[in-house]
Image (cartoon, rainbow, N blue to C red; front, side, top):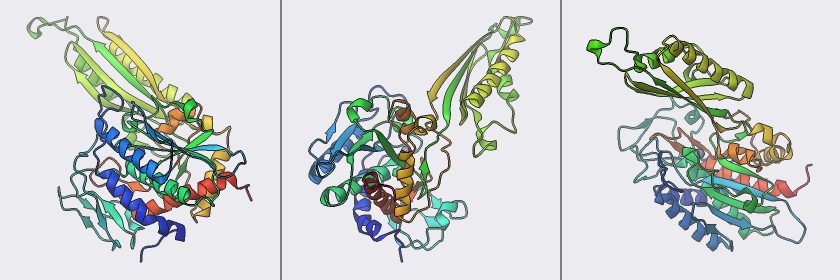
Length: 422
Ligand SMILES: [Zn+2]
């Protein structure tokens, strides 16, 4: 027997699944080297579909702008002044796995065993996926095995749409003014770049873009990117004695001198930050190292960046004719400092989770979300679970029951915003 978190969740499950299956079939994969916003036309196709569906729900102002942002308003009922709260999910899917021709498969009443998918030899093995172990009896949605599924973040889109349709059909349910935004290009870090916070007009918002049921996150990494460029002295190797300075060798030495037992993504977890070298390129004449630097604490992040710089300066400094350029670009801030001053935003979300019978899970995100940038732009935006797992891979999956729970949490969130804390 599938187990739902509530009767409300059970009543929303069919619609959430139906919407989800429709949205994932549209290829909205973001492009890593964008030439415009959105980076791919598929995102506009999904945006147009959603505007049509929002209009059908009865929302008068649903629009898709030229940059690929869908916005809409579900006004509060009654005449009393109400707060304005945002609900946000992203339209695009990751460039890390194939996204064309997604064929969602529903595995009814999961029996706890290995789920084999028809294509690509892909299997979901509970031995390797602890999150799957607790899902016996639930309905699991996967791709057909050779594409991603797109639960990140079409689950969030489907859950917001389902909750908003429910609220629109039930004006007797309490709600604030709800502002909805579906954003493009989150996966390439650009989801907030054309977001007009002032026009959105909400005092706070929630991204529905987390994973495990019950998650509520108000803390992300602070992120920066380091680009190290080394100019060597390239001389024909036959005449190189005493002259050649090989940039590729210097780059390799810098990478080799980074600590191997700490400060890397593979040796850290929880609240520890890291330096992650994700690309090394070059030749004898010139070489480049690209790395991302992450920490929850800005001082520690600065220390990691300083360590990287010190190693690069020392290694390259041993060759007086070599040149070094060290560039450090901020990427996104830890959202927490912007959310801490408005604690009710998180408290109300906790109440909504508890109203759905869920204990809030409060782990910091080892990454960034659109909410990191939006919070810094003046729209405090923590993140709520959407239910998907194994993001950005052909093994991506989501439970229908978790999707229904997320939609129900959004309905309860609306109620909690206009209900005094008890
Ligand atoms: Zn996402």
